Length: 258
Image (cartoon, rainbow, N blue to C red; front, side, top):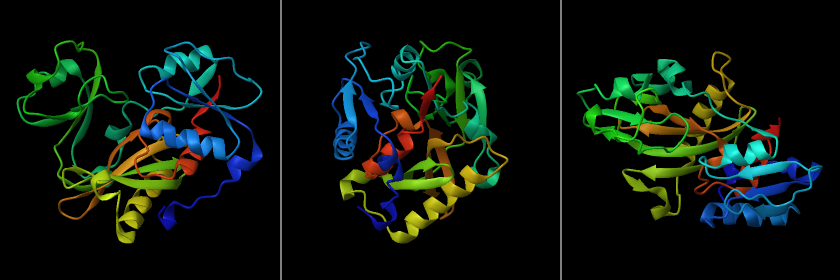
């Protein structure tokens, strides 16, 4: 664990909780399972959309794929903390350093130049540079929202789990076109400090609608400047090399009683 990932474990001390995971066993949810057991939490898994009996007195912490999490949360009378769909497009230019629009699939299909196109808050189609909008998947409905972005060349990208304006844990996830796991998520102190500073500056900016608990991805562009890549809900985001205990602290605040 990197020294900058050492976090206050206060949340682990003040309450019991149940971590609810999907039925899929992944490296991420296994790491969170081990961390939850270490702090004395209960851990359960949904079976498809069948939910086990839970102690409703304790907080329920979700870590489930975005496709299923809303249905699971609704059945448990929970509200998921989400990022506004147009969040990235509303950021001041100094934070993104490229042209970004919140649009629709119908408008995107008419694009004739290379554009990075992604769904706002899910993985309904591949987020990538499309040489033209006609290459978007045919099953997408014209009214569906999308984020359109000027293509960017990233040297390194970091995932930051943020709670109340503070980065609780951080990890690189992509470096020079390769997964950061290939190099055991290594990063310099200077890179970590720069990524953390930008994520915290944005999450504390009163001009921006930021959730209390969410994920911000930041990166260094080819010119050496730092910019926001995107933001996502914490309850479905990969943890990469982040400290799973710190991730649990964020997840504890990423759902609430409806």
